[in-house]
Length: 282
Image (cartoon, rainbow, N blue to C red; front, side, top):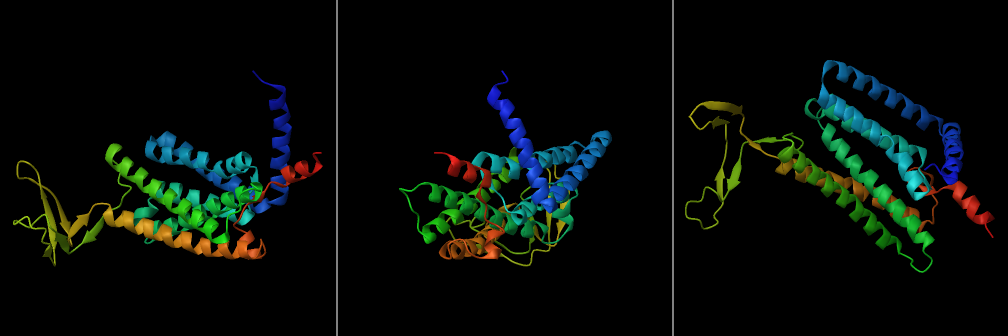
Protein backbone atom coordinates (compact mmCIF):
# COMPACT_ATOMS: atom_id res chain seq x y z
CA UNK A 1 0.00 0.00 0.00
CA UNK A 2 1.00 3.62 -0.49
CA UNK A 3 2.26 4.82 2.89
CA UNK A 4 2.50 8.30 4.29
CA UNK A 5 6.29 8.08 4.31
CA UNK A 6 6.23 7.38 0.57
CA UNK A 7 4.14 10.49 0.03
CA UNK A 8 6.67 12.55 1.92
CA UNK A 9 9.55 11.19 -0.16
CA UNK A 10 8.07 12.40 -3.46
CA UNK A 11 8.28 16.15 -2.68
CA UNK A 12 11.75 15.59 -1.21
CA UNK A 13 12.85 13.79 -4.38
CA UNK A 14 11.34 16.55 -6.54
CA UNK A 15 13.23 19.20 -4.54
CA UNK A 16 16.54 17.36 -5.03
CA UNK A 17 15.91 17.13 -8.77
CA UNK A 18 15.14 20.85 -8.96
CA UNK A 19 18.23 21.66 -6.93
CA UNK A 20 20.34 19.46 -9.23
CA UNK A 21 18.93 21.26 -12.27
CA UNK A 22 19.74 24.62 -10.70
CA UNK A 23 23.22 23.87 -9.36
CA UNK A 24 24.49 21.47 -12.05
CA UNK A 25 23.05 22.82 -15.27
CA UNK A 26 25.73 21.24 -17.47
CA UNK A 27 25.08 17.79 -16.01
CA UNK A 28 21.32 18.16 -16.24
CA UNK A 29 21.29 19.23 -19.89
CA UNK A 30 23.83 16.57 -20.89
CA UNK A 31 21.66 13.96 -19.16
CA UNK A 32 18.57 15.27 -20.97
CA UNK A 33 20.25 15.38 -24.42
CA UNK A 34 21.80 11.92 -24.12
CA UNK A 35 18.53 10.34 -22.99
CA UNK A 36 16.71 12.05 -25.86
CA UNK A 37 19.23 10.79 -28.43
CA UNK A 38 19.09 7.24 -27.08
CA UNK A 39 15.27 7.29 -26.93
CA UNK A 40 15.05 8.42 -30.57
CA UNK A 41 17.54 5.74 -31.61
CA UNK A 42 15.52 3.13 -29.70
CA UNK A 43 12.31 4.11 -31.49
CA UNK A 44 14.05 3.91 -34.88
CA UNK A 45 15.53 0.51 -34.00
CA UNK A 46 12.10 -0.73 -32.92
CA UNK A 47 10.49 0.26 -36.23
CA UNK A 48 13.37 -1.27 -38.21
CA UNK A 49 13.28 -4.49 -36.19
CA UNK A 50 16.90 -3.97 -35.07
CA UNK A 51 16.53 -5.68 -31.70
CA UNK A 52 20.25 -5.77 -30.75
CA UNK A 53 20.44 -1.97 -31.10
CA UNK A 54 17.15 -1.65 -29.22
CA UNK A 55 18.58 -3.74 -26.39
CA UNK A 56 21.69 -1.56 -26.12
CA UNK A 57 19.49 1.56 -26.04
CA UNK A 58 17.29 0.17 -23.26
CA UNK A 59 20.37 -0.85 -21.24
CA UNK A 60 21.80 2.66 -21.74
CA UNK A 61 18.60 4.33 -20.52
CA UNK A 62 18.69 2.18 -17.39
CA UNK A 63 22.39 2.86 -16.79
CA UNK A 64 21.79 6.61 -17.10
CA UNK A 65 19.87 6.29 -13.83
CA UNK A 66 22.91 4.79 -12.09
CA UNK A 67 24.55 8.04 -10.83
CA UNK A 68 21.29 9.25 -9.31
CA UNK A 69 20.59 5.80 -7.80
CA UNK A 70 24.05 5.72 -6.22
CA UNK A 71 23.49 9.17 -4.72
CA UNK A 72 20.13 8.16 -3.29
CA UNK A 73 21.25 4.78 -1.94
CA UNK A 74 24.51 5.92 -0.35
CA UNK A 75 23.25 9.45 0.44
CA UNK A 76 26.21 11.08 -1.26
CA UNK A 77 26.63 13.86 -3.82
CA UNK A 78 28.59 13.23 -7.02
CA UNK A 79 30.72 16.10 -8.38
CA UNK A 80 29.50 17.43 -11.73
CA UNK A 81 32.75 16.46 -13.48
CA UNK A 82 32.56 12.85 -12.31
CA UNK A 83 28.88 12.57 -13.23
CA UNK A 84 29.51 13.97 -16.73
CA UNK A 85 32.31 11.43 -17.27
CA UNK A 86 30.03 8.58 -16.13
CA UNK A 87 27.19 9.64 -18.47
CA UNK A 88 29.52 10.05 -21.45
CA UNK A 89 31.18 6.71 -20.65
CA UNK A 90 27.81 4.93 -20.72
CA UNK A 91 26.87 6.58 -24.02
CA UNK A 92 30.26 5.90 -25.62
CA UNK A 93 30.39 2.26 -24.54
CA UNK A 94 26.81 1.11 -25.11
CA UNK A 95 25.47 3.35 -27.91
CA UNK A 96 28.57 4.33 -29.87
CA UNK A 97 30.68 1.28 -29.01
CA UNK A 98 28.11 -1.49 -29.44
CA UNK A 99 25.18 -0.07 -31.44
CA UNK A 100 27.27 2.13 -33.76
CA UNK A 101 30.14 -0.44 -33.98
CA UNK A 102 32.84 1.98 -32.79
CA UNK A 103 34.58 -0.96 -31.07
CA UNK A 104 35.26 -2.46 -34.49
CA UNK A 105 35.70 0.63 -36.67
CA UNK A 106 37.45 3.16 -34.41
CA UNK A 107 41.02 2.30 -33.37
CA UNK A 108 41.75 2.35 -29.62
CA UNK A 109 38.07 2.98 -28.77
CA UNK A 110 37.91 -0.11 -26.55
CA UNK A 111 41.31 0.66 -24.99
CA UNK A 112 40.33 4.22 -24.06
CA UNK A 113 37.05 3.14 -22.47
CA UNK A 114 38.67 0.38 -20.40
CA UNK A 115 41.25 2.86 -19.09
CA UNK A 116 38.47 5.31 -18.17
CA UNK A 117 36.55 2.45 -16.54
CA UNK A 118 39.49 1.67 -14.27
CA UNK A 119 39.71 5.35 -13.32
CA UNK A 120 35.98 5.67 -12.62
CA UNK A 121 35.70 2.47 -10.58
CA UNK A 122 38.71 3.48 -8.49
CA UNK A 123 37.09 6.90 -7.90
CA UNK A 124 33.79 5.36 -6.83
CA UNK A 125 35.43 2.71 -4.65
CA UNK A 126 37.76 5.24 -3.05
CA UNK A 127 34.93 7.63 -2.30
CA UNK A 128 32.60 5.05 -0.77
CA UNK A 129 35.36 3.62 1.43
CA UNK A 130 36.47 7.12 2.47
CA UNK A 131 32.92 8.12 3.43
CA UNK A 132 32.35 4.90 5.42
CA UNK A 133 35.73 5.35 7.05
CA UNK A 134 34.75 8.84 8.26
CA UNK A 135 31.39 7.64 9.58
CA UNK A 136 32.88 4.77 11.62
CA UNK A 137 34.64 6.47 14.52
CA UNK A 138 36.03 3.21 15.91
CA UNK A 139 37.75 2.30 12.62
CA UNK A 140 40.28 4.59 10.99
CA UNK A 141 41.96 3.43 7.79
CA UNK A 142 45.34 4.81 6.83
CA UNK A 143 45.56 6.68 3.48
CA UNK A 144 47.67 3.88 1.98
CA UNK A 145 45.28 1.12 3.05
CA UNK A 146 42.28 3.11 1.82
CA UNK A 147 44.00 3.56 -1.55
CA UNK A 148 44.78 -0.16 -1.79
CA UNK A 149 41.12 -1.01 -1.13
CA UNK A 150 40.01 1.42 -3.86
CA UNK A 151 42.47 -0.16 -6.28
CA UNK A 152 41.20 -3.66 -5.44
CA UNK A 153 37.60 -2.48 -5.91
CA UNK A 154 38.41 -1.16 -9.39
CA UNK A 155 40.25 -4.33 -10.44
CA UNK A 156 37.43 -6.52 -9.09
CA UNK A 157 34.90 -4.64 -11.23
CA UNK A 158 37.21 -5.07 -14.23
CA UNK A 159 37.51 -8.82 -13.66
CA UNK A 160 33.74 -9.20 -13.21
CA UNK A 161 33.23 -7.39 -16.52
CA UNK A 162 35.58 -9.83 -18.27
CA UNK A 163 33.55 -12.67 -16.73
CA UNK A 164 30.44 -11.06 -18.21
CA UNK A 165 32.04 -10.80 -21.66
CA UNK A 166 33.08 -14.47 -21.51
CA UNK A 167 29.56 -15.48 -20.44
CA UNK A 168 27.95 -13.49 -23.27
CA UNK A 169 30.29 -15.00 -25.86
CA UNK A 170 29.75 -18.58 -24.72
CA UNK A 171 26.05 -18.49 -23.86
CA UNK A 172 24.61 -15.71 -26.04
CA UNK A 173 27.03 -16.33 -28.97
CA UNK A 174 28.27 -12.73 -29.10
CA UNK A 175 31.85 -11.57 -29.73
CA UNK A 176 32.53 -9.18 -26.86
CA UNK A 177 36.02 -10.64 -26.39
CA UNK A 178 37.44 -9.33 -29.63
CA UNK A 179 39.97 -11.40 -31.61
CA UNK A 180 43.54 -10.42 -32.48
CA UNK A 181 45.35 -11.39 -35.69
CA UNK A 182 48.74 -12.95 -34.92
CA UNK A 183 51.52 -14.29 -37.15
CA UNK A 184 53.46 -16.27 -34.52
CA UNK A 185 52.25 -19.24 -32.49
CA UNK A 186 53.92 -20.73 -29.40
CA UNK A 187 52.32 -23.86 -27.98
CA UNK A 188 53.09 -27.19 -26.29
CA UNK A 189 50.07 -28.72 -28.05
CA UNK A 190 52.20 -29.47 -31.14
CA UNK A 191 54.89 -31.21 -29.07
CA UNK A 192 54.54 -34.88 -30.06
CA UNK A 193 56.85 -36.04 -27.25
CA UNK A 194 54.46 -34.64 -24.62
CA UNK A 195 57.46 -33.22 -22.75
CA UNK A 196 56.07 -29.73 -22.29
CA UNK A 197 58.38 -28.38 -24.98
CA UNK A 198 57.25 -25.10 -26.52
CA UNK A 199 56.91 -25.30 -30.31
CA UNK A 200 57.23 -21.96 -32.13
CA UNK A 201 55.60 -21.42 -35.50
CA UNK A 202 56.62 -18.14 -37.15
CA UNK A 203 55.59 -16.13 -40.21
CA UNK A 204 52.07 -17.55 -40.46
CA UNK A 205 50.66 -16.10 -43.70
CA UNK A 206 47.09 -17.33 -43.44
CA UNK A 207 44.79 -19.79 -41.71
CA UNK A 208 42.37 -22.03 -43.60
CA UNK A 209 39.38 -23.42 -41.70
CA UNK A 210 37.88 -26.68 -42.97
CA UNK A 211 34.53 -28.28 -42.20
CA UNK A 212 33.87 -31.94 -41.38
CA UNK A 213 33.39 -32.78 -45.08
CA UNK A 214 36.57 -31.02 -46.17
CA UNK A 215 34.88 -27.86 -47.40
CA UNK A 216 36.63 -24.55 -46.79
CA UNK A 217 34.69 -22.58 -44.18
CA UNK A 218 36.86 -19.47 -44.06
CA UNK A 219 40.31 -18.17 -44.99
CA UNK A 220 42.03 -15.79 -42.56
CA UNK A 221 44.71 -13.76 -44.31
CA UNK A 222 47.71 -12.47 -42.37
CA UNK A 223 47.95 -15.10 -39.63
CA UNK A 224 45.59 -16.77 -37.17
CA UNK A 225 43.05 -15.50 -34.68
CA UNK A 226 43.74 -15.32 -30.96
CA UNK A 227 40.26 -15.81 -29.53
CA UNK A 228 39.78 -13.42 -26.61
CA UNK A 229 42.90 -14.05 -24.49
CA UNK A 230 44.92 -11.01 -25.58
CA UNK A 231 41.81 -8.81 -25.52
CA UNK A 232 41.03 -9.86 -21.93
CA UNK A 233 44.58 -9.25 -20.71
CA UNK A 234 44.78 -5.91 -22.54
CA UNK A 235 41.51 -4.77 -20.96
CA UNK A 236 42.68 -5.73 -17.46
CA UNK A 237 46.04 -4.00 -17.94
CA UNK A 238 44.32 -0.80 -19.08
CA UNK A 239 41.92 -1.05 -16.15
CA UNK A 240 45.03 -1.37 -13.98
CA UNK A 241 46.51 1.82 -15.47
CA UNK A 242 43.29 3.79 -14.94
CA UNK A 243 43.00 2.56 -11.35
CA UNK A 244 46.61 3.45 -10.56
CA UNK A 245 46.18 6.98 -11.94
CA UNK A 246 43.19 7.69 -9.73
CA UNK A 247 44.68 5.99 -6.68
CA UNK A 248 47.63 8.41 -6.86
CA UNK A 249 45.17 11.33 -7.01
CA UNK A 250 43.08 9.89 -4.16
CA UNK A 251 46.12 9.20 -1.99
CA UNK A 252 47.27 12.80 -2.32
CA UNK A 253 43.70 13.95 -1.62
CA UNK A 254 43.59 12.10 1.71
CA UNK A 255 47.08 13.20 2.71
CA UNK A 256 46.07 16.82 2.10
CA UNK A 257 42.86 16.26 4.12
CA UNK A 258 40.48 17.01 1.27
CA UNK A 259 42.31 19.98 -0.21
CA UNK A 260 42.94 20.29 -3.93
CA UNK A 261 40.48 21.48 -6.55
CA UNK A 262 41.44 18.82 -9.09
CA UNK A 263 40.81 15.81 -6.84
CA UNK A 264 37.48 17.19 -5.58
CA UNK A 265 36.11 17.06 -9.13
CA UNK A 266 36.18 13.25 -8.99
CA UNK A 267 35.45 12.43 -5.34
CA UNK A 268 31.82 12.37 -4.06
CA UNK A 269 30.92 13.93 -0.75
CA UNK A 270 28.24 13.32 1.86
CA UNK A 271 24.85 14.72 0.84
CA UNK A 272 24.58 18.26 2.16
CA UNK A 273 20.91 17.91 3.08
CA UNK A 274 21.68 14.92 5.29
CA UNK A 275 24.57 16.78 6.90
CA UNK A 276 22.30 19.71 7.78
CA UNK A 277 19.64 17.33 9.05
CA UNK A 278 22.12 15.48 11.29
CA UNK A 279 23.41 18.76 12.73
CA UNK A 280 19.89 19.93 13.55
CA UNK A 281 19.00 16.67 15.30
CA UNK A 282 19.32 16.84 19.13
